[in-house]
Image (cartoon, rainbow, N blue to C red; front, side, top):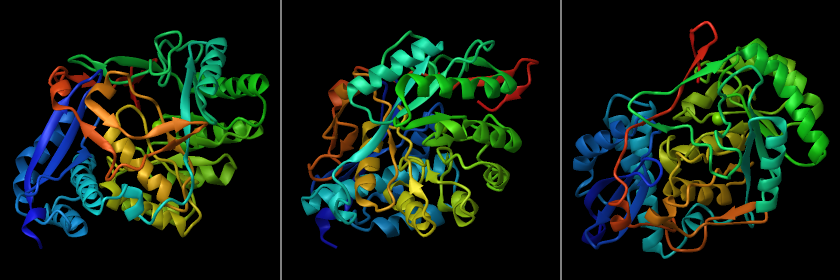
Length: 410
Ligand SMILES: [Mg+2]
């Protein structure tokens, strides 16, 4: 090891340009820096403490080049494996080290991952509405911005607040589930009303926009297996690109029943953290798309492991890219998307413009696709002075209750 690539410091940076982000910055003795996204939506400070109090002291003096060894040291060495806090912290270290390695090589990260397998990364945007007319307007906005695939969510008649629907009439980044408050907002839920409504929503969007536009929908883990099977079957005439998170993610076997009943493609994985969470889903071909995030699944190293396993079974990627993924996590996803053969689609929910004041990113969006850019490393820099203007504010994801008051999956 050359002395200059030893890790000199690992700093935890917290900022809140419209929403909270936790970022890890690793610096080598030669002054080369790497960034990793350590944001865990609604539980941000737990990862900040995990990194600050337990991981940063272990990193100082290690060779920044030894990415796999450091990943294994943090994963096996903690004894307490897996889980969102641990795997988000490991992800931040992993991505920061890949950023450093690519900068030292003088190459954009995707070159070190095998080089580009395609010219650009197909992304989908979010459209939502408080009624079907507003949803149509929102779909039109995404198409006008250049999106070639759109996720559709709409308010369900009879339910006051619904996941994925903006409180504002229109606006590209107006839906932000994490609310700045000291208590979580409570929302209402009724699965029967939802199951009756969603096929009508697809029907109206297909009538308005035709059969060719790829349409996606997120069930947000709200259904039982038999309910999800019913919805998948009801949506078949509308040929969705995918039905996302149809059942609670803990029970991989639950997808067997859904799969037996429907040919609607299934995507799941944004709350999963390791390849083990996908083992049954992939081996039994119970899903079509892995919906995980490099920021929560052990970084480039952890997510590549999931994608390579998925490739054996013809399962494709569909990485999480909501606004809780910082530009650092988004860049990591884009480099991996560009390099792997079994890429499917990438979520792109577009941050509030304030985010670009803190994170300067090289990635671009045009004609339905994104590209991570050709800057050495990830292609993202962090503006400390700008970050200082946006102090952390407590924020929670909402919780959901059924109409009789029972807590339901949000
Ligand atoms: Mg989802």
